[in-house]
Image: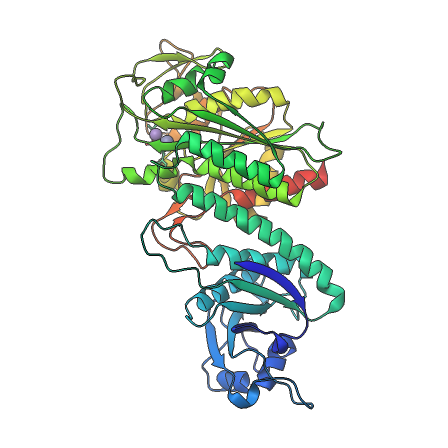
Length: 515
Ligand code: BES
Ligand code: MN
Ligand code: ZN
């Protein structure tokens, strides 16, 4: 789908469908909606008067321009260039914020996609009128909501219908606000496309998206956007001593790859970077501690952290944020085999610290441990890891509400909480007290990779913390966020959600402004 900005009156927009809006409680539409109402001969006012549309959030009404209300402008009478009008409810003005702007755009894009005759749409910028939101911010959310709602997963079928919505034109009436609208739209587009890239990676089947393929896609994205990139293969990982990661990879026929992406903007290229690390298990069978078969297919999502990091770096590069950012994605497959690592094994990671393997299914923390030890060389200002680490996070927080946040640095934790609330990708903090070390103490090694169920979430983070020396660090357990078994809301479809991209971009922006 193509997005563009155009100056003018929505009544004159040449599209198959135009979108206007209405706040709950409004009986006489004003602004752009009022102009369209007039061109329709009061059609919108009539809908409201008959009680068929109240402006309630997430509701829509479709109106058709009659022959007399269509065509070129003549005399003083206003007319509509478009044959259809979609009215979208904005809800109560006192509950209206940027999330509602995004939601309204998403609802409109979804409704438009259901109309077979609609290939092109044009919309006003929700929230930028009477509600008084900043034009750039509102345009960003309109672009984002439109792209997120229009996402379709790649299909592997012989016959595929084409995407039917091909373009969305964002119409801004005021010439003075046009540049802001364009800037906002470009930002929303960069972020929206990056979220869709993360979704594509997660949705991809695990036979096709091997560690090698992930590395290839990350590198080709990096070349497109102008990021620096490097990949370590297993020999290179051996050289730096990544014994944990290599133990996990041992049973797989697909070689592990450690992807490193860097955004080093002019003037900031030498500064200490913000670093993101994403768990990239392209498929998690559990290894010798094999998972039960029923839902095992869903473990193709175990690279959701890596996908979020790759997507975030794409957006950050595209936006050219004035902040050095490095993304690291250890991509590994966890398989059972005669060569696999076993429960009972003791392995040595990059820092030299040893771990006793209790479960080969607790592979994520091992892979993260080596990746987190590796990034110390960048002298980061902060490191955030994202991982589909535990089933328990979903038990604690439910699905698709908030991811878990674990940190030993209050300043970083606060930054993340703020970025989470602002981006709409919410987090909830968990404790990191010393006592949570106890369950991961090993009789023979320095630490063990799995504990009992009690306090298991905090103990999993405590394991990772062992390998995070030299920088402020936070761990996000996103296992309850990355894959949805049905549509969550108008912006978030069934399947991969792309969770984490918007949060990381928001965090990077905050570092760019405040450091
Ligand atoms: N990738 C899984 C966690 C997971 C579960 C992700 C459900 C997405 C949905 C992880 O590697 C894992 O297997 N964790 C174990 C840890 C246990 C062995 C300590 C778990 O949660 O059962
Ligand atoms: Mn596992
Ligand atoms: Zn896993």
